[in-house]
Amino acid sequence: MALLGFAALTLCFFSVTASQPHAASPSRTASFPDPSSSSSLGICASSVIVHGYQCQELHVTTKDGYILSLQRIPQGRAEVGGSSGRKPPVIIQHGVLVDGVTWLLNSPEQNLPMILADNGFDVWIANTRGTRFSRKHTYLDPSNPAFWDWSWDELVTYDLPAVFDYVASQTGQKINYVGHSLGTLIALASFSEGSLVDQLQAAALLSPIAYLSHMNTALGVIAAKAFVGEITTLFGLAEFNPLGLPVTAFVKSLCHHPGVDCYDLLTALTGKNCCLNSSTVDLFLKNEPQSTSTKNMVHLAQTVRRGVLEKFNYVRPDYNIMHYGEIMPPVYNLSNIPRDLPLFLSYGGQDALSDVIDVGSLLDYLKLHDVDKLSVQFVKDYGHADFVMGVNAKDIVYNSVLAFFRRHIGA
Ligand SMILES: *[C@@H]1O[C@H](CO)[C@@H](O)[C@H](O)[C@H]1NC(C)=O
Ligand SMILES: *[C@@H]1O[C@H](CO)[C@@H](O)[C@H](O)[C@H]1NC(C)=O
Image 1 (cartoon, rainbow, N blue to C red):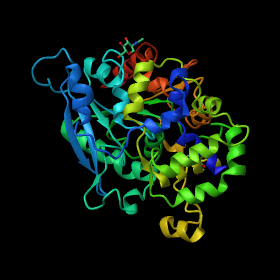
Image 2: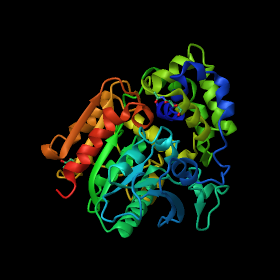
Image 3: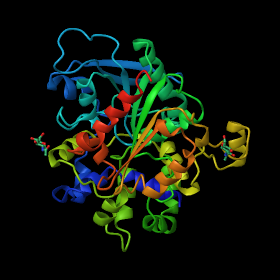
């Protein structure tokens, strides 16, 4: 069953293609960009300044040496002169296999960072370690397997705190947070450990994932039967590059399995995305997918298999004892999220990664949360990518995020 999550998450970016009939040919895989080729243009130059916004390229170094890129949009497009201080800061965190660019692919009137900037927020776009603009380290090179020795535990322990500390030091204010997909999982895990909560004003979680047991069942059966050997081969890979040969071959072998129709399969994996603009999808495919570590993918697969949120499982008891002092990895207990922390959750009825039943498990952990601090929105037609790139996401989701933040600022 480990492969279920592994394969599903491997394929999650393909689902965007699958929802666009014109773009669904398998050969599309071959036209993906090389995520390791560093374009000389940063995200500010390629995707923000061109729309008339100010934007600063910044870097943050984590305690374990990763140098993360961060873009700041300090003010709205219409504002002239310097940033007028005291704007509420907001950190925007992307999901797995993509980077911060995905938030910026729609028009300024439609994309979340620019909507927040135009509504008086000081916007900071994070980019997880291993993605195109966050592939530097104080002494490790991405060609060194040690560069890829991390899972989402390290995003909880190092990446998020580094970005929060930096934004707090620059603004001196409490921070608002928006996460999508893996960006919600690492936030929830952090909050459950009491991390970040002192610096946080409010958190909006789009397509929240914490439990993944119901993500997909059909593929799980196939994967468990047919692909057990593959994961061992892939386990040895340090970098999980969706464009690299071993990963592409793995996906192809999955698609060629008798009885598996990849076109339907891919659509089934994240659910149909109702509301994507085909020009935006083309732009998405020019920019994504991005690398992550194989260890991170395995950790996500473990979350699927075990149905509990726990730290990376080294499987061998002696290894777990070495890392954790216990035979089993420690659990992230979401019941420990402070009950007065303002949370907004928005989830989609067609989202097969953030399945309605799994979101139910998450809400169950939050059932003792202060009622006036928890807002939950259900969007019947939305799939996984609609929350980031839906043409109508402003009306359906982002306006609610704005209203939620405003309600809790200074509260
Ligand atoms: C889709 O994107 C194109 C190119 O950016 C734009 O001209 C068009 O207005 C967009 N359509 C919608 C419905 O937003
Ligand atoms: C999680 O925490 C709650 C309350 O803090 C406790 O009652 C429960 O037993 C914990 N669960 C686990 C699995 O540790």
